Image (cartoon, rainbow, N blue to C red; front, side, top):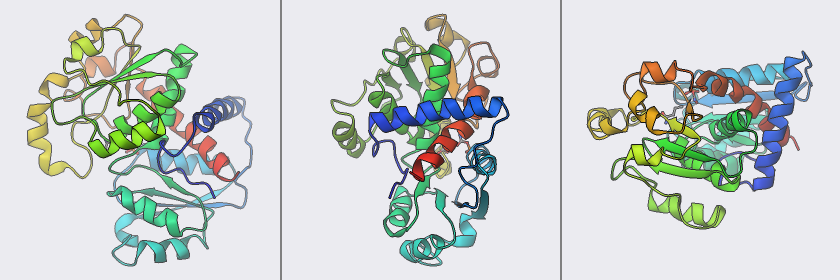
Length: 303
Ligand code: CP
Ligand code: NVA
């Protein structure tokens, strides 16, 4: 049975297939065509954290595929609290055809997948946001055509979004650069998983953002404080201050460079309002692609 928990688990061929399907599904919708792959299928979403894009793009995508979605807030279900992950999975997987989770601890999606009789999708955990990475690469491909040989520079925290993107880039021939303050790079356990899955060393860390964007095609950023890290917010605001994506930084990049952000953005923290609203920004095209990328994942899960 297939799951979609991390990008690390999947081969370049699978990622390539998902991007091709996402493009095809997007074009179909633009022509007003709806493939009912999920007719009579039910998708269950359990989210421990807030969401706009992930929840709505999955629910809308499932509806377009002819299926039904059921949403429950994590507190209601109490994954691993009200009952064990295995008990949840064994019960839930008799009612729905796919389980989509957004969780604090990545071990929660792994624990559910282990006992589930149906595919499980990670809609964001503390270490991974694989659905986001697929929409990001789809957006890059729309902007530049072939991905191979392109460079993406992530300015900010080596967080869930950065890690999934680094792996996806590594598998599809995109050079990934991380520019972050000391101590906010990729952790050692991730380095080991990256080495096994992608091969080679971790992508380079370049301390100076201006140097990091000098030859890049994409500047990417995300919030400095992720959901679950709120207690560190003040410290992070101080430590990331030099890592803002602003007009001065954009000037250091090639003229053709595009700006991506997974959203939600904290305007005038990690990215300035003029940059996110400016001509280099493709953040809403990127947000829209979430639905197409995830419909491709849903179809692939059914085999
Ligand atoms: N980018 C993203 O996952 O957005 P949401 O948190 O709104 O789902
Ligand atoms: N890194 C952010 C991404 C939100 C979509 C978080 O985990 O909160």
